[in-house]
Structures are given as C-alpha cells and as structure tokens.
Length: 367
Image (cartoon, rainbow, N blue to C red; front, side, top):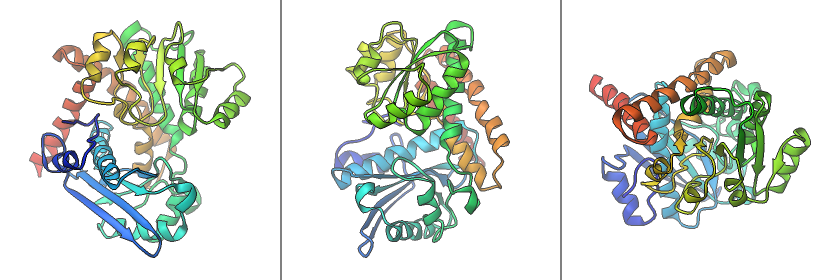
C-alpha cells in the first residue's frame, strides 16, 4: 500500500499504484527512449482535473527502471496535491530522466526529452527538479514550448529556489504561531538538513528573523559556502547529529525524500518539522508517529510550493512580486491545515490530503 507520501517499491506495486484510483489513479504514463542521444525517461501525469499537469524533471541514476517509474508516479501524485493546495489551475505531473546527470546529460538528450514533452500537446508542463537547472530548461524549450523554469534572458523566471525557500519560511512561521502562539522564530533553534539552493536561502531568512541555525549537508562544499556567507551558523557532521541536537525547536529537511522514518522520528528533539524536501514521510503511518510524539508536521507539499507558484506564473508573463504575494499565502494555508487537522482529529498530512482531494473532486464534477 502507498499514498501521496510513500512510494511503491516493486514492479507489482508500480502497476497497482498506476491503476488503483484509491492509491494513484494516474491518467497517463509515457516511457520515453531515444537511442541516438541515450535518453531514457518516464513522464507521469497523475491528474489534469484542475488544468494541465505541472511538475519538474528529475535527472537521477536510478538503480532500476521500475524504481524510476515508481518515483515518477509518486512525485506526480504529490504535484497534484501541491498544485491544488497552492490554488493553481494545474494538475500534477512529473518526469524522471534515468542516468547520472554529471555523466550523460547532453544538449542532444535534453532536446530529445523536449520533443517527448511536446508530443503531449500541452497536457504536461515541465520545469527544473533535482539534477536539472535553468540552463537545462533553456535547452528543453528549444523543442518544447511547454517548458518553464527558463532563464530571464529566454523569457523565464529563473531560479525558483528563492520562492521555494520563502514559502517554507512562511510555513515555519505558521507552525510557530500554531504551536507557540507567536509566528516569530527569533531565538528559536532551527536545524536545516541540506543547504543547497533552497536550504541556503532558507538559512538567510532564518538569520534575518533572529533564529539560531544549525546545518548539515552530505556535500562539504555546500556547508563551506554557507559558513563563509553566514559565520554565525553552526555545522554538525551529519543528519543523525542534527536531529539529536539538544534544544532544537524546528527540524527542516531540505534534501531528498524519505527523511522521516522509523529511525528518525524517535530520535527527533525538535517539536516542529517543516522543510523543503519532497515526500519526507518514508511510508504511511509516519505522520501518526510524529503526532503521537507531539511533533507538529507541516506537510511538505504545502510549504514547499513557492517554486511551483513561480514557474506557473511564468506561463502568464512572470511578475516576481505577484508570485511572492501568492507564496506568502502559504502561511495562511498552513494554519488552515492545522485547524482542519484539529477539527477532524487527524494528523496535518491527512488534513492536507483531504483539502486537496476536495478541490480536485470539485473540479472533476464541474467538468
């Protein structure tokens, strides 16, 4: 079994998720291969009830093709929920390109990928994700007009990590307001796992707010760059040391998914989890484990929606201040989810799912 927060792991599970409307109900999955360029990719469309599916392109060296399909399915479903709660007129989709981007990424491969996206006729709008960048989207856009996350020089909005971090910061403020009665993070100790593009910007917001920040990252160069820019920050060796930090108020997972699992949750010292990583809950039931420990979880796809708000706006003539105002509403959305969770007696992740599913169901009924 799986839900929006837990990925299937076997070929049987992949097919079950694809065709079972209770678990996935994906509308379309496209397997893409271009031998000349070496492209192998999966494009998954979960829902177009609210509009064209919108979601990024992940470039990753998956161990198996089944693992790649499973990731695409899970990420696409998550995008449906994220876009619904962000108030966007977009459904959810995701693409994954199989391979090590450091070794196999070429313009020819990206152009071939763009042709596959274009063949969907606008049902899927792509953007950046792990392993792809603004420069890559500029290449994809040469063969596909349904491409966002492009550079400003090519009519795009540029780096979406700025508003992703801003939205997470707003979700963190809402979490503080709900739990402690005050949205200010001044004096709070916040642990950030992953200080790449989004995590780096998030640390900046936290320091401006007066928070005490502790960080870690598997890439030593990312930590070094952050400490050079922000000498007040403290670094620890790894995520295990971070989650066990005494006096930690907030834990912000900002790297890859599955950060909250059966080993992590019992060890957490923080009272709030609010971060930028997608699919933070390793499997169904983790959200209840968090609630049972009295840890407030801000659903990842709610608080990290700033980036998709930005790239969606690109389709209508990008305006940064308009996007920033929309991303600021993540604060209110997060509070509404906590209120719904209390009213229904369920964890916030379940409350967020219910609100998103209601909006998608209304859209399908209206059709």
